[in-house]
Image (cartoon, rainbow, N blue to C red; front, side, top):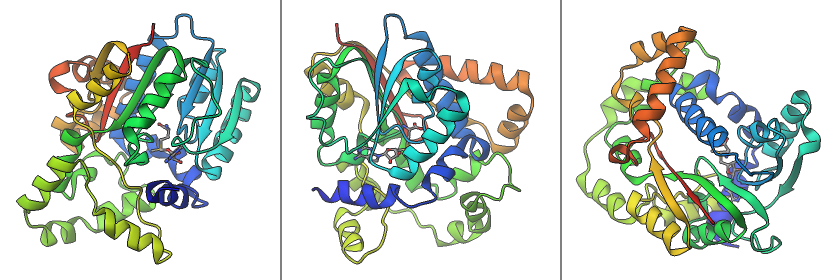
Length: 311
Ligand SMILES: C[S@@+](CC[C@H](N)C(=O)[O-])C[C@H]1O[C@@H](n2cnc3c(N)ncnc32)[C@H](O)[C@@H]1O
């Protein structure tokens, strides 16, 4: 097993992972924008879709959405806590019978035959976590898709600004009184992060070239020491992702950068918009249009979205 798989397995199987992930849209605005973008894309592209595979489906943000549309979804994930949380939510939503839960790693999809699912999807970076096998993973996801593929992966252009802005996430905090430990960490470490920051062109340049934001050898060492490093994530360039999809025969490809518009707006204004239901809806509609412009694809928060047809 590759280090990235082992690292992801340990990281995502921490017992509180399912609970934390299920709360994301109550804590961070960039997660609301990203979810809204993907939801809109999914709901507009369900013509002829009866079965779907969700790779790295987490706590079911999108697998349950599709199950509620009557689609049979294979909910596939490396994490048992995520699957358990998804099951709990699916039961509450009354769609447990529409979902098949499978614990597994995207690095091995050999149990699925060619063209097994009308729609294959994988959102918010599971593909990136399969580094150094990300290209083969995309090929495998395309292989098991019959009609359409929709994915979002870590974006190099979107993630690099984080390296020069250690307080980037603060921009998206929805409720600064939230009990969420990450929100509280972002708030309490803000000054320390600014103080400790110094611009490092060499580190930035290295990540720009190799698509990795962490030191892979350090992550491996930390794993071997029994620690739980964050998943190694490969960050794609837009033309690179498009090229891989094309090489695998995907047609009518379009890319987007969910979060690109929201990124231009300060926290106080974003919070104001989010608290007013009608402004919030119109804002999210506009974000979808703006973020779908090919000129901003890749500039979203840290994700790059792609969709395409198989036939
Ligand atoms: C950020 S979450 C996204 C979850 C879901 N797709 C969503 O958008 O809500 C990433 C998910 O990928 C899963 N994952 C990470 N590495 C994986 C791998 N190698 N194979 C399958 N799932 C993986 C994690 O367990 C986690 O549920």
